[in-house]
Length: 111
Image (spheres, rainbow, N blue to C red):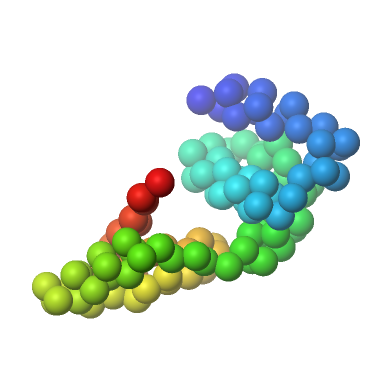
């Protein structure tokens, strides 16, 4: 809910913000995208950091797993042609995507 997001993100103080590494800032960028989609009429609590969050996100390189490569190969074999590690206009990296059909597959694991 909105209250949950605001409570969690508002607790990130200035001191904490300065000690966050790129990976954490990158994850906060993804949270900001989710927040904008879920609550379009509200301001993201860390909006003042949006530029820094996006910069950190853009510095992260995709690290596809062997499982992702195997799934991509299997999809190609069955005729589901796709882009691998497709980047959306918002900067999201989708494991496999067909932008023309607005379809995507995300592969999680193994852990």
